[in-house]
Length: 128
Image (cartoon, rainbow, N blue to C red; front, side):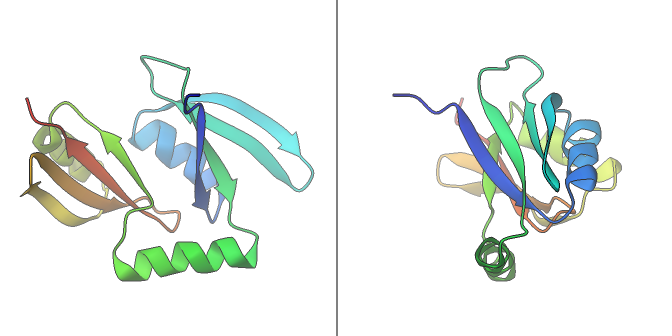
């Protein structure tokens, strides 16, 4: 068994696709019409075997969950980076709003930002 696909709820799929590709640097893998919405996945530019689905938050239960996490300051997802301070500066220069600048959290360094689509996202640098 292995993880192949994970999802993040988004309030606008077009806005999410733009943010996750143009700002964060992921690559679009799938963008398939599915009724009123689309099946959109993005992948890391250096590998495409693990996909992140940009899932519409149209379901009231999903929207409530997403809102609850955001209000409590809980990240919906976490992405590993090689240098959290460098990513923080790069993203901040690109207009990304951080709710937590880089801080040591046990053996990792983390930072948290809003993805413009209703989520907080954590980036983390594992120990060397």
